[in-house]
Image (cartoon, rainbow, N blue to C red; front, side):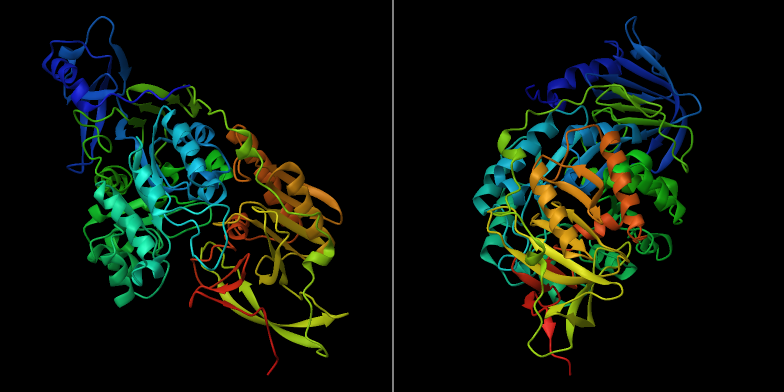
Length: 600
């Protein structure tokens, strides 16, 4: 299916004017609803909305003059007419779904616009992978805008990716339809230090008049932060406390507050608005990462808005943060984000502003969902064979590949250990004194092994280390080819034989997630596209993901959304300690460190 561009406002202006003036009949009129006006922050009862060619032509107390014999009437009496919800920062791949299936999953939740950074697939397939994501996104019945990934690798010199993104790639992508800007600039040390490559990517984006996404994952709000802001990033979603949110908006950035499957950063930051009284127009809500189970069972941006309201935010302010604030930030205030003349007719009908039940969803003037059921097709791209053949280990792994040799003559050894933090992206840099058995260092207590298995170039490389916080017991292992951002393979386990079984299983099926215990596979989520996504329906992927969560619990892990923690253990741009194909990385200093240290 070819992409058909949505008609521009200038192309439809004559018809919009004719309908508003009563000279032409509207395609659709929504009657008698409560107009949620996010420009004036008001709710105005008994209003009508007239729609023509997918755009709003008229909003007022009476649209009778816009109605003809063929006009569809939607009765909205007693219901709020809310602008379609916008997700300002997200990664479709984190849902383990292709853009088509992601859209199908979120449309019933009222999301009609997404600003997505496909940097996960960029690490695996490069610019070609970004183009595939971009092309399928443009085929959907809702608005999916693409941010060209900026950092593959995310931290040059500390990891090896399948492909690298260059300034030339960024410049090319800026000419594609639907590309709205540059994806999150994760290499914040590069920006701070004036790295020519990073600055060239930012410059290419700014020359195109588009928005540069930020990612400042550091608690330092001093001169380094100022240097990063001066470098051009216009927003940031890595804040975790009120001071982070305040610092960002004071320096002219938009503070993006996220509620994903495992990131709960709204409650700790929204007090900048609810208690400190800062101007809410520079605060934006987003998800960042949501897996399929969250989308199917809990919701998407409707979940984030409800959460913000539960945290004390005025419902109208929360809705602004998920509609007009986002549109304005990306220069799309005249296209999306409000129910006003000329804008795309993206409208949600709901009977309550606090609980926010999503009853009817209209996108581009069409009813796309009713009472939780999708009412339109979400077309699929024909993904090429190359995108389905991305797991190359070099050789069949055995337990020997996961051995950690001990220093000669030692009985115990001190190890640097990655500490998982529940509901947070950052980890802790811990140390543990571990036993030595037959010349090998062994995990003990809550400390188990983690391995980063190279899967892009078939090098056969395996980097071993230790992680704590999962609570695993017995002989088990969990492996995933979703390993932000380099997306090699992460294997965590208490037994080396199980680790080898899990890794080889994913090589066999072409990518995904698996859990083994005592030689038995307890759960499997197949992700054949780039080892990151499935083109199966979201409900099917969510069911398999739920089985995965249950299997993790059977193995002793009871953290909230622990899979998200697992998949981020190789993200070498978020402190404190991570693993990469090049070794153990201290993200506080952006330097590799030794796994083992002598006991003092």
